Length: 246
Image (cartoon, rainbow, N blue to C red):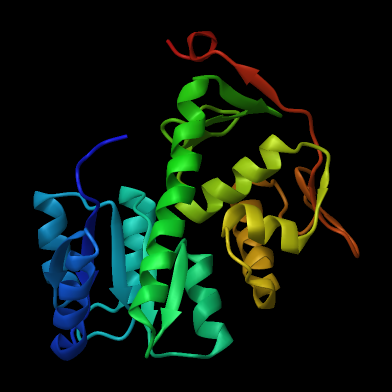
């Protein structure tokens, strides 16, 4: 384990919240950089890469949803939303696009620290599992490289997937032909008790199907088991990269 402090990027336009929170997190041992909007956050990310981003949803200019989509798809960074929005639909959107957790304002700072450490532990587990084996997942002509988080279709074309889609697909690949209900998938993919958000799983499955199925309305790979959940309906092999790379 590195002795370097955990780096956080705190993005919130409300200085009266951002600055005291940054001070509190610094006292907890984190190295905190602040940004008052998405543009400043993007500029900061060109200089250093944090271990985790704390991100407000409602900001002037580019909002947190758009920035989160950029972070999860292009940089694969863990994201926790800080949001005043309490409606379930807003939380679901965050989970769908790859946010790892959310905290509704006003919140207890100690709870946020616990959430940060939980997300980082989960990221370390998912990131640390792959190096134990560099083998790729091979299934029905598709390949998933868990180290590079790269999905390749049977024609050899790279299919972009978000962090949330990667975690969901990995869960299916680790349990081929097994029925995984929504609660179990949420625990495996989101790592939190979020049983109110079954729709988040349904929508992520739909997104994967649109990218991977010839007919997403009649899926062959990721099948719905009525009353049970979902199942990856194919066998999965682990193959060495040398077998599939030039």
